[in-house]
Structure formats: C-alpha cells, structure tokens
View 1 (cartoon, helix red, strand yellow):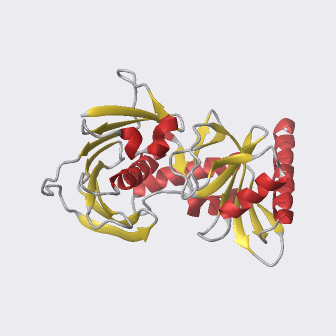
View 2 (view 1 turned 135 degrees about the horizontal axis):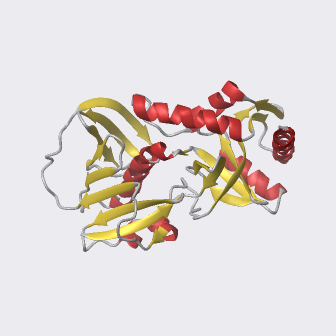
Length: 305
C-alpha cells in the first residue's frame, strides 16, 4: 500500500491506498492539502483502504442512525469498541464499509474498486471520520459557508436552502476585500484561547479548497424573513446558535460532551448572532456592520478588564 499525508486545519491525516490507485485522481479536492509526512509525527486520523472485492467480514453491530444526504445513503452501526459506517453514493448501487475505533483515530475501509464513484465515496468517508476525530483536539467541522477578509473569517450557518452560499456571495459582491473560504464544511478550532476557521477539502457543490486559516470575526445563523434584522446572541443563546451546525454523533455521550464543552468556550470567544434577512445586499451590509460592532464592544470590555 502507498501512504499519503494531508494537512487539514493544522491536523495531519494519513491515508493508505492500494499501490495502483492514484490519490490525486481519486481525491482532487485534497491536492492543496497534500504534504510530506515525517516519521513519528502525530496523525489525527489513519485510514487504510482495501480495494479488493472481498466478502464483508466486518462485524455488523447495532443500527444507530440511517440517513440520506449529499454523501448518499449512510448507515451508522455501533460496535462494542467503535463504529461501522455503510455508505452507497447517490449514483452507486454498491455498499462500502468503514470500521472505526470509538474516537475515529484509526479506520479500515472496504471500498469496491469497480465503483465508478469510489473517489466520491472515499471523500465522504474521510469527511465522516475526520469530523469526529478532531473533536478531542478542540476542533469541529461546521455546516456553513465562510468568507474571509481583512484578516478575519465569518461563518454563515442555517438549514439547507436558507441561503448560506447566497449570503457569502452578497458579502463578496458588496465588499471586494472578501473572498470565499469554504462553502459547506469549514473547520473551527480553539488555538491559544482564540477561535480560528479553516478551509477544507469538503466544500459542497462549490470547488473552493483553500488550505488557509484565520481568526473568526463572527458566526451568524441565517433565517429567511420579509425584512432584515440582526440579533446579537450571548452565552447560552450563542451556544444554541452554534450547536445545530456542528458535526457529531449525537448519541455518542463522549463525543457529544467534547463538543458541548468546546462550544461553551467558543460562544464566549467570538461574536455570535442571528440574521433574519432577505437575500439582498442590504442584508449583507447590515450583517457586517452589526457583527463588527459586537466585536468592537467585546474588545472594549476585554481591555477594561
């Protein structure tokens, strides 16, 4: 097998593929994150992929969740010492399987090499495993669209169809100094007491794969409305704004506890708000004005203390 190493949000990920497989061809969105591995370095996630058409000898486990989403049809089973994930792509008929330790730091994958969408499936499995493996390291994958400019990143969260990508586009149209960081799954991470946002290889339908990170200037949940209004959220209310966007196995007490502890810190560390809005430039201008005012007020309080 051939090893590949990727640097995502400052975390090293190790991937082992059959020798004849080409990682750059299978995982084009991972190219900006490819790096040289060093002997003995810490890997947040190790994934070993078997591409042979072998019988399924993995333990079955108890079905915990079953869902249809952009990754395809996904089943999550709990095992005595970890998890099993079965996945079939939206276009594929074959079922592919990942076995993971409880914290997802080590995984083994059975991926049918005749599957035409095997690169898509592998990308999805890496996304599932990575989003859980980073939780013990005070980081979380967030369902959001994120922009950056003037040394800060801003995240727009909300239900599918709310207009996250539209709002990012409005910011970039109104404020030329801003660009897209990620359009679906950025990572936010606590580092030296500050919250940082990072681009990732997972950006939904928008090909935006930037291996960069910067401090978070604000996190805003969007809600469609016939008017534009910004509401600042603090403490427990800020926590409630952030929680639905985060990737975690909700029924895993340990992982969910790690997430809740992390969000409690983040809710105190960044400006958080709810934007009830129309899909127009006035909403973008209001959002930036209000979230920057919140940040100024927070900094003034910190300086006084």
